[in-house]
Length: 258
Image 1 (cartoon, rainbow, N blue to C red):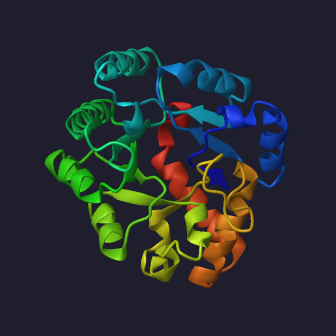
Image 2: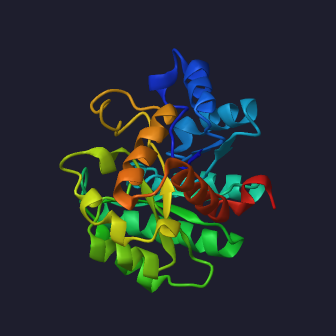
């Protein structure tokens, strides 16, 4: 299995990070992809990648919740410098979040569009964060439509129509702990989404799947997400593992500079 979205560098893991990673490795998770947030966490993220060069891969980008009027342009300069210095498997997590702050929508869109431009220029996938902003996100993606524009809708929580719209725009869906929630709703229609359009993620330390909901999430719980997909799709765990892992490898084909 591949955890396509995990914040293993977060402070929630400071006391047992190595043990947490080992638990996941023991469960058969072969790769971990770390989304960037902002410059305050880059060093910690890249250091962790350096410690596990064959398993952990860092993305680069500016998270929409950290697009602030006083700093977003400087933060984007830092992102661009990193992208020019070395290879990353994806630009992310980027997008639009209107749950916490609607007043920054204009600059969130500008930051999102700029990072999409870099992704197209460098032929990299993007990993999208969207919260209470599907319409705005789709407007940007339609405006920026390009043959090279592709990636993952991280932590997909929309409806079937939005899932199909994302897939039509050359994106696949990141499915995590929400699929195990009674009120998560995506389990009600996910069987109508082709399995080759899905990747697994945890978003740890957030959104732990049942029966750990409300507690710290970790990558070793990815099997609980896969187990839910077994029920939804009616096929074996091994097949879920195989298909979603191949999907992730296709998206992150550049993870080793191929």
